Image 1 (cartoon, rainbow, N blue to C red):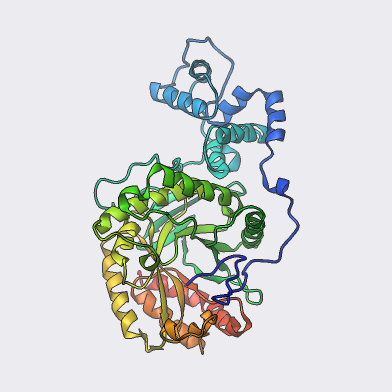
Image 2 (image 1 turned 45 degrees about the vertical axis):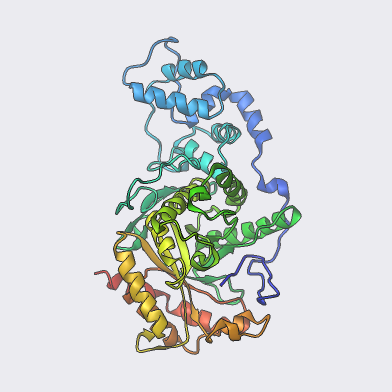
Length: 478
């Protein structure tokens, strides 16, 4: 099932799900390099760059002298950061780093790395011009965020064996974005996401014009170009900005661009990685905001992707797991889940990918639920998913589409996509399905229904159940 922000699909009868358009000038959405250059000219590019990178520069004590307390490792790290930041001469960087001495501890808050706004902007400009694909990643580096820093795409080695129980960046990390007011730490424990040490159980749904949810599901699943892409990005900017401004949260599905070649050996080839990350870097500034909590990579890929049978699931898992790290390097270090529909098709391939990422998103649309029992097909799938995920250690298991099914999708009239997924008939019916998912180990829930008046009652019931759902998840783990 697909749904998108601002996307209309006559074949499926879909409607846009973004807030109304607003007048946004393109220059308002771009980083002002001209302003940064003016500040750099006044402050001196090297001093501002070194200060932003954590290599504070006191008065020079001699070109060849290293101040007491600076270790060779500190010196090498400072030189490497300086060169990567865009300074052309290693000799110049070495001289400045030798004079700088040990880096001072970062001050709390977003200004911990750079001493002033001008210093920060100068550092970000140098970082972006040095080849880093995301301004958000550069800002995170220049601010000196504590914890694991997002790697540049393609720099993190694939694990040589099965997934570890805990992996920095996959099961824990620190998220900071260009507009974030603070660094957000998170970790996964007992298959629950803890955000700033508070349990985060998303009870989300698509944006509804009449029913406001605390947690929202935003999809990017249409690849556009030119003026249409700019308008699409503006709508995303409005949607994510509105949710973040009111203190809400959102889970972001990134469905584009899908790899052109799905064979495991070339899935993460340099050309393919570059094509994917270029598009992601275009999108990231519009969606990496305070309310972002997780990324879902691709939609129902156990069905829609072509999986070559000669490759083992673990080979695909490792390749797709590396793609999860590329996403973190661009959008920010948040949990990354792969999304499936049912436990058929290439489910084992995607399950292996979940083990090399932060977890698995699972879609379920059942025709009925009676006394905590769903359709027989889904009962079998849920049992398989529960057993499979228990072997992966602390990984998230979220229901990334919860809904009702009218039966075989093939029976739907042409152009009547949503007729196959009717509204719920009562609040108790929603709780019946969700409580069964909690029993199977799920800790996140997204209602998969369109922004249409006939679904408003279902959205209200779902919103009313939010605290009960969260309490149910936490109680199941005591």
